[in-house]
Amino acid sequence: MRPCLAFALLFAAAAAPAAACTNLLVTPGASADGSAFITYTCDGEFHPILRRIPAADHAPGEMQEVRFWDGTVTATIPWPAHSYAVVGLMNEHQVAVGETTFDGRPELLDETGGLHYWNLMTLALQRARTAREAVEVITSLIETHGYRSTGESFSLCDPRECWLLEMIGAGPGSNTAIWVARRLPDGTVAAHANLARIGEFPTDDPQNCLYSRNVFSVAEARGWFDPRAGVPFNFGEIYCPATAQKKRYTATRVWSLLRRAAPSLELSPDFHRGVVGAADYPLFVKPDRKLALADVMDLMRDHYEGTDYDMTQGVDAGSFGCPDRWRPMAWEQGGETYTWERPISTQQTGFSHIAQCRRGLPDPVGGCLWYGVDNTATTVWFPLYAGITELPPSFTRGRIEEFSWDSGWWVFNLVANYAGLKYSYMIEDIRAAQRELEGGLIAMQPAVEATAARLHAQDPALCSRYLTTYSVGEAERVAARWQALAGALIAKYNDGYVIEDGREREVGYPQAWRDAVLQLRPEQFRLPRAAADSLATALPY
Image (cartoon, rainbow, N blue to C red; front, side):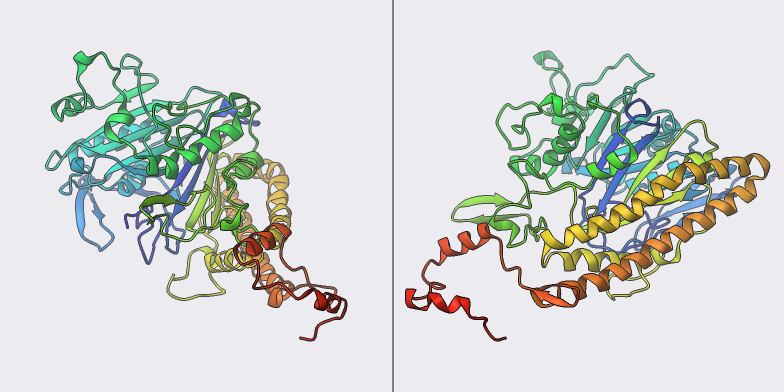
């Protein structure tokens, strides 16, 4: 199982996450308040540990050791004279990053390279003041120190723009990588989810498109592209050819994000259903209306509700419409291959964030990382400002091997798992608590930031203390509220009842599910007609 993210400097995990993440990019012109957004779900079976890297000055010749998960040093890199502070996946200059792994051509993996993609994310945040600089940092470092991962899509943003950088190794011993970076046109949104998204790209527009000098030559040398054939060069098709199962697993998520942002496009499901010859989805689209923060949150809570692929419907959703599907995703049966749907909201999410970057505010105030843990459908995102100097303790501790009430991740995981017992009921309680907390935090945002901006003008250190106190306090309030919710759900839905006002209510099973049961076993539960009148008599426990 390959890691999906999370470089050791920022996040620790007892087990490496799966290569299974989802990103949405929203340019400033596509958002209701001019924010640039990057959303990121880091999916896999692991316990995330939120970390902060302070800014630092470095002496000439001082070197930074880059290590693998096991502590092995894979590269040694010169420090810049000054490295920037990083909170989660946002730095002090409002540069934010996300990623999804697409693997691509396995023969291009260079296991002698020095830098894994999660190393590059850290290094970029410590060195870049803009998203474009982050692209340049990442692509220049691999030229010197080599690239050790498979295919990767990086989301990069700052208050002014969003970039998508896609990268794959150039082969064993190459000590470099193949890559293309596209700047999203302002006013558009884009998404990626474990499948390369950049197809054809301009070669004469350096303001909006950058690419490696070997992007064409490696494909030609390997026989994957013939410039004389008259077929356009397509980065994704060449370096990340997809099977029907992979399209189902990846492109369905992209389709759902884009079709919900721009329903007027009526995007076809054919590509993600593996229809031969179906066109891939646009790299970016203009949303039908500009997206607010709450809209972005809603987009990341998706199980394809209301479509033919709605995971809350059907016998596979169980008796109470639970959208979770247990691994493995694909299986063979009766000579056929099958796969469950893979949603945006999944129980495998370790953590997620919505990075909000804004002009018109000082960087410590304009940069806000909305952070949440576990399943996006049942999480609460809370604000961590770029200028904070401490982190909420509940989200900096815990191990996946041992449940702890002191760990925010474990508490959210408990609520999400317990909700699966009676999902259609409990999700309403959870959504009410989400609206209470997130709605309050969003409503408070203008006043908090106006105060912080005034303090920053007078005393930046005081502004930092204010934002730290606010961010840490609200995160701990969220953790405490979720502890209370966990207890309330256990009491309310005890033993299959719905208990309200101290009284048990028998709610039984939905009609559609009972129909499915009787269709499978029509005789087992049938009572003799003469016994029908006994239903009028209450049955003992």
